[in-house]
Image 1 (cartoon, one colour):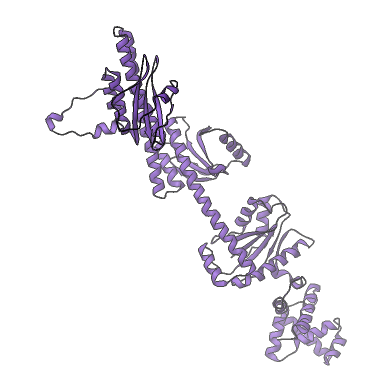
Image 2: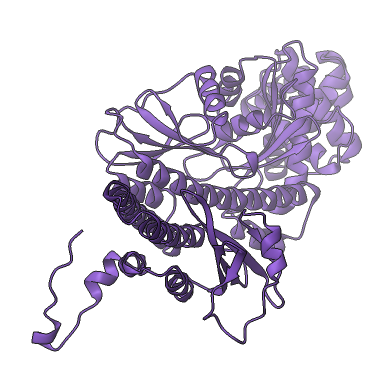
Length: 569
């Protein structure tokens, strides 16, 4: 490095900006003064005077090694706490901590040359230095050591040009190292400031990926722990993105986890994102030419830490939302205030004003598996919204806007889980939060009927249960009324409108075991009149009286209508 002649005198001004940019800590300028000194004490005083320029530090004392041991260099603050010289001797020529009154941190930095210890610089601070501070203090001590070594060499072997040349070489090497360190520090500060700006602007993982690409010039990407692409910045993005097998993915993650830093896997340099030990994904650089250097690795590692904070924050928000959604559906299944339910649903982005269905899913052996929960949620999600979902014992319970399409959900789950042994129960339509507990019981009834039937796997809708809707425990009057309306509603309405007795006719017909003569006698009508009425019943109800299941449901419905409902129209 050569010093250009100054034109300060001609211009009358001095612009320190270029020098300050090259030498922000003043170490380069100080090195020229140090190596120009011929007196060791002057070197120590210069170094002590520059300590405070490096940060919140203070030089408490300086020492030089003499024939009688350590000698304090005069010139430090007279009002500063006195270091105990005995403590310095106890260091036994090693670096170490020194106790001083009213000082939180004090450290003795050894000044060493080729012949061993040359002296000490005693530095204090309110707290220990960070990584940058240690670098600067170590560099300052290194410069002081080199300058002291130079004076020793000059004094002891002034006439040996070879050794003087060696010292100059060491000095030049130290300056080159200082320049290299300064460049590295500048690059590291650039990485830190760039990612800090991204965080300050609220940038997510896409912004972090873009920043890493701009810092390194290599395409950057983020994948989740399963190998799915989350974001990409830079050229040559694969389309379609390759899909890895789960076995390969797990093996790769285990390989990376065994190393402390970024790991090269084929053409990629990969860093694992795992805050608190949980693997949330990977951050990688595409590097087919293997050009990544220490600066690239530093940028990747720093971006990985920023991404870990971002993904952890995202996970915490998702977990909080999931808890709120589960609490909401749990309360809805038990019964809760409608006004509160609407407000809480809106807070988690779910519209309770729409029509809903309750779905209960049971798949043996998957009750506590999180992948089962994800599979159920994906299989029942619509393009508009995802369902509310919770776990009840060994069953998953969902509140969804879309009525499952026949066996579509069952088929999707059987394929995803690789097991066909599951069963699903689906309720009738629910138009308000107050009806959700009833629909939950309906879905449970449908599931129970499915699991106790000959074909235990598949989907059963409460609408299709027929007589089984009222055979189980826990039926209320509304369920009985709904059953009667389903099978006799048209006849009841026709009797009310035309003042006929078709429901009573059907009831007596069933009571007489389907015998025309007995039924006609019980109704006190002619046999042809009974035949006419039964034909009208077939036409109005659209039921086939010859079908065994239909006859059973109609007979039970007439019994419920007459005995439990009292023949109400």
